[in-house]
Image (spheres, rainbow, N blue to C red):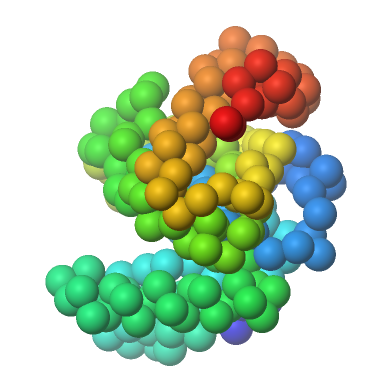
Amino acid sequence: MFWLLKVISNAWFILCGMIPYNYNRRKIDVTKSYIITPNHQSFLDAAIVYTSIPHLFKTLGKKEIEKIPIYGIIYKTVVITVDRSSMTAKAASFRRMKKELEEGISIVLFSEGTFTNEPQEQLNPFQIGGYSLAIMQQADILPILYLDTARRLHPSKLLQITPGMNRAVFLPPLSASNVQKQDAERLKDYAQQYMQSCLDFSRTNQKKEIWNYALSWLQLNPFV
């Protein structure tokens, strides 16, 4: 089901005139499992993960979507569903994510959790769950910037798709090794500052330069 979704997503994007471009993807070690944290600005983000991320992963998604005919069957196999109204269900989803990471499968979490009806230059406040999980599993955090999804499909105009580039920029991963549980909040804020700085840089510079900029930022701003 996962590979079927990748084929369908790539074909759909191309047929709609939205051409995927993936910067720095070859620099990522795809043999490792990550907590993958893209920015979130459009409904299109749920599809672009399948055109950008090259290796096996599962996303965290709403349980209600399981009820959609046909698609719900596919959805259940590739998504870790969560009922946000139940603390017990949230805990069960967290344990399942932990299990998938232990089996070598990456987890995609949109740290912002949601997006606004109008695209914003500033990232929404990050949620702590993914960073707590990264610390628990000592898993690297892999940030990705989706630069065009709000232009291709505006969050307030669900039926209006605009052809053009659909760029994903992979950033150097953040290590959660030796980070303590009590530092999850700091790690979350650090990751947000890192992604925001790289996002700001991307607006006025060549996309191929972002990787080196990100490495410089990490050197100048070590997580201590």
